[in-house]
Image (cartoon, rainbow, N blue to C red):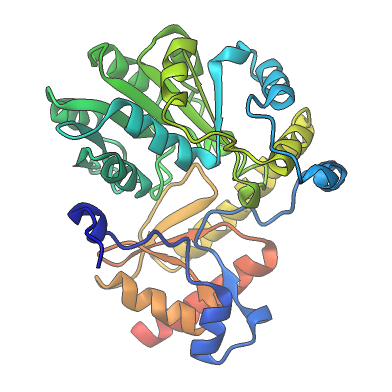
Length: 364
């Protein structure tokens, strides 16, 4: 048997959620009756024009993709009003997190972030050979910026702020983020993960792109996987100082974004009305689900995203997740009775509510 690094051997591979086919086999369910609300995917398909744009480039599949993503980077730079050289793309923002950890971290260093948050921060640290420090959220299930700041030490190379935070859906204001970054040493890289940026309606919130353009130790991450409904195409991007991103790019594999993925992302741009429509639809559906939970006197955290973090009676998240799965509703178990449900289509949301009532009846 080959020898592998102990910290890698100890990992369980990341799972987006149980495959529908697997659940159907175990519980003898019709696959078409099962809904998957685990991965915060959009319930809607790609934006208008995307399918045609992808179809048009499939004939070039024998050629490698544009490693510089010229067309996409030009269009996105125009849409965001940033210099093209201040953009870096990856196969989803997860790949960019990994590249950042590899470029800035390594043995003898650590990566600091709030917890619970996106578990891939831990994976990225371990893949790079870094250690990690998980700082508990505050009493409001928000990032505890003071505690995160206090956790930074001489070994810290990267700090990640998930804003809005996954899985709680909470935010820190633009002023709070800027104040935190002001307190961080210039040689520590601060990554602000804004994967759910478009969904936020709280006026206190604001993007950190301006800070990333003006400071060499700040990077903002975004993705086409959520509001743009391109999770299957894997397109993420970073915004930051050109010299900083040039260093991160050295830790990337080449040809990281496929030709079809570039075409899909490019075709999604320039449609602000469609973005607004989807944001409003998500907000209405989230409000409905939040109201359902409130009517049943269930603890939940006010979300600014396309998911809701809620608590079942008791402390066994995996147990409750299994009860939902038996009914054909796949949710994300967290810990201590907490679950996360993605905002789905009207039909999916209704099926979740029906399953919720069945599970609660069995518990109570």
